[in-house]
Image 1 (cartoon, rainbow, N blue to C red):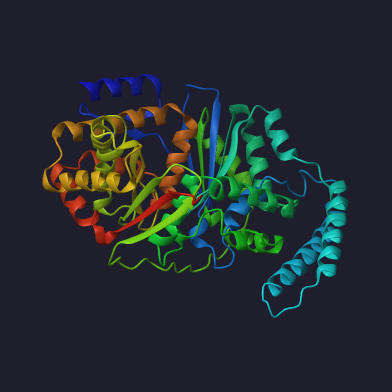
Image 2 (image 1 turned 90 degrees about the horizontal axis):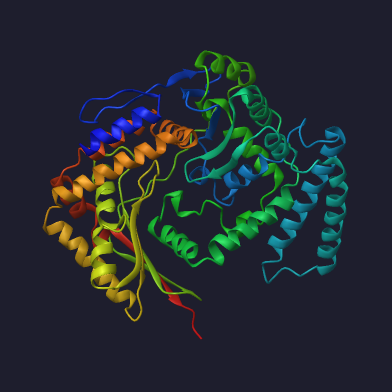
Length: 499
């Protein structure tokens, strides 16, 4: 009855749901699917309940595809894509370009000087440093005369845009915005223009912004610092070990030509997914997208051979010092997206550490009062990832006591099957999550685009839900026994800074 009631709600609020059975197991989305002549994968979902639409563009390039020494380039490029084009944010691009190139040369010379002086055998040249920094400041000031700051943002905002933003992950870079439906042509023009004619102005100013972003998210944030250490140790070979924002020595020395090469290599239409959800006519929308984006030529994509992570043969541990409350993260290696065991592991993570009714919460927070907070989740990656348990001990209990409590709960999962009630809770949560996501055009666009990019088919969004709802108690027990072992885990702990 609960599931049937949820489906009634979905049908009432979402006209895009076109079919379901009485048990709630089948839901169809009214997706118009098209591949443009240049390779863009286009998905359109009409949603007549609003007078707006949400757009989601995803390029299949993230930190996992970056080369050594250039980590953080994908994230840096995300920032650059808001800096305008030859038409937007520009005063005189012909006069601007040689000054941009001069600034590139100055920063390259400064970077080489810094690199050389890292060796104790190289004599220091403080005079040359000061001269370069002075010339860089003067050239940067000159460039400001040729820039209209934030014009790209201002155009969107004048036309009612909300949610204009972007993000970078390990497997992709995403751009999203919502607009009134009568601004579809504007969206198509602005987005195609910044793909065809970007100008990476203010690169070195923005590089400093990224450096501060890294400081706030990782270096001054205990949870970020711990998560970075966990991934760096858990992945010895796969580039998932690198932080999405990049390592400090890399980001501090990235140059504008690096970003331009990265862009020309990966921001190709045949490496792109576009999803539009909202008050749209699919035929008209496809025609407008083809008119604006169709002239962008496809590019030969490099044959990236990502080093795969070998099996872990023993527990790994790392501790970091931080002026913060102690906490821990435990990461267990999990198989790649779509592997049958991933569904059982996602269910196991939900049962263990998702919400106030989870086992960890009831036993370690409400019961034994070992933890002040605890959660378990799986990482949404294309390649094999991690099931992560993140926990903070409740004083006066220690990290060691909390880890023993976590181990005991995992052992209980291995010894006794989960209950039908627990499995039903997961199924109910999946239904609730689906209802929430379908209410939001922006959320649905992002989920469809993510599934298309990672799995190669947007239908994975529905298929994975069905597969998780079909997980049995035996599936959970078998997966936990196979993957949640001491040999397959990495433990990262954060300890108080020494006085």
